[in-house]
Image (cartoon, rainbow, N blue to C red):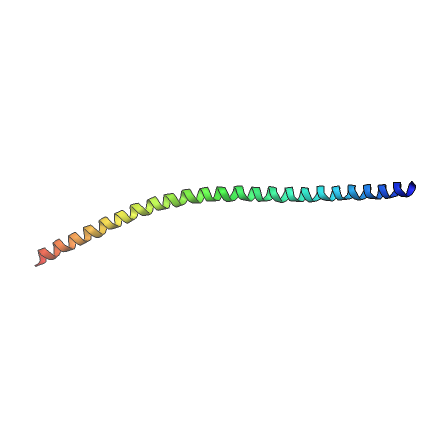
Length: 87
């Protein structure tokens, strides 16, 4: 019986060791998950900030392109009128 008890104790010790290793691996995995969740939050924040900035730049660009078109049209009309006056 002592041999069986010793074997059982050995198996018990190995099982406890395996459980401790699994707990350790789980803790490491939890740490990695937390890091990636924090990075995800930072990236989502950066994306929101950049999206807002892109929207503002697009609005500004649209206004500037419209202003340039107005300048181009005014210049063309003025040059045409000036050419007629000079003839």
